[in-house]
Image (tube, rainbow, N blue to C red; front, side, top):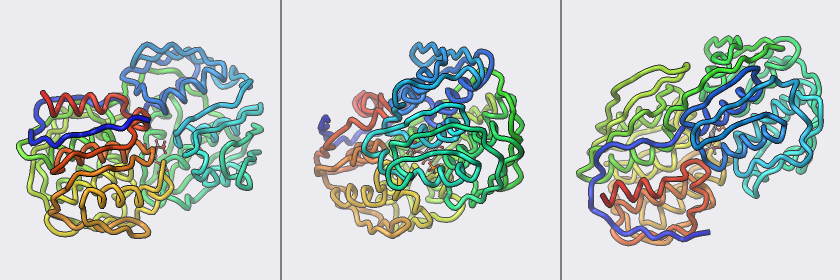
Length: 430
Ligand code: SPQ
């Protein structure tokens, strides 16, 4: 646990930068590469704590994986080669790893125990366990079988037709992974479209996935074939510097090679609606995912309403969007974001607490928050809540604060962006 002090800086952010690889895509590339037959090479893999837990999980299932910085080679031999792990599999802080792996482990012919850190241990797993049990899975654990640690006795599952009760790409993905290995067809219907990296990447690994609006269907017993995956920069990491450039005077910043999958670009739409100066260039498509460069200039902003279908497209960016809204004219109202309450921490409570400590005018709602704009931020000591996105939001807030901002603990940042503080320092001190 390391405290970090940020001094006020008046310097604009300028030049070019890259952010590390996308977390959601890095997890899935390790999973599908390990399940496939043949070699998979992953480039620009995110070497963060969460993704390294997924990599180690597959090593413990017996998969041969070479790891050299951000390049990964997986020598896949298909799911029939997986071996029963001899010790519990640890997923640290990662909801994505735990939930997607439940879909796979429930379908494998052996027993596995999964566990995580104290934050993951209180996140709801029943949202995945309920549909998997409908498919025939045998899973048990704490909290009447809904909390980690969980024991999974794998068996042959059967396809289901499932209407998702929550807006969650992780639940959708867990069911699709189980559906890929099940007997028959599995159909999932979403409330609103959530990130679709699973659907795109399964297709790149040779599976057939049918998407019809909010309905996604997959035929069971399909095999995956190894392929190459180039991971785009993570737009959720880029979001911190997008907002920094928008709110710090005299900024013009380009972030190169960022993933622009439209299920993830809600932050760009929001900044445009607020009157921000943000442009996209060098767009290209690699392996079914859309990339490009994002240029942001400091802009005069106005408050807006953020709700409905856009929420899953920016769910992880809401803490940093709240900071953005403190600098806009008028009020910003965020609703329909009740999922924030079950992330690494309760992100509604944490965002409101951190920004209030810094002098912002912000009110919590059951499913979001109201942010009153045009506020000068003071300094102060803020809590990270052991949540990487809250810690990074606090650090970016310091760029416009009048006095020193002290972050109580920076250790969670390595969950998704291990070099964040170095990148921030370089941009603000060079
Ligand atoms: O993996 P984890 O801890 O759940 O990560 C978070 C994050 O902020 O990095 C959420 F806390 O992102 C999720 C995201 O909120 C990653 C994800 C995915 O890769 O499928 C989907 C979203 O979660 P959900 O619950 O809406 O499916």
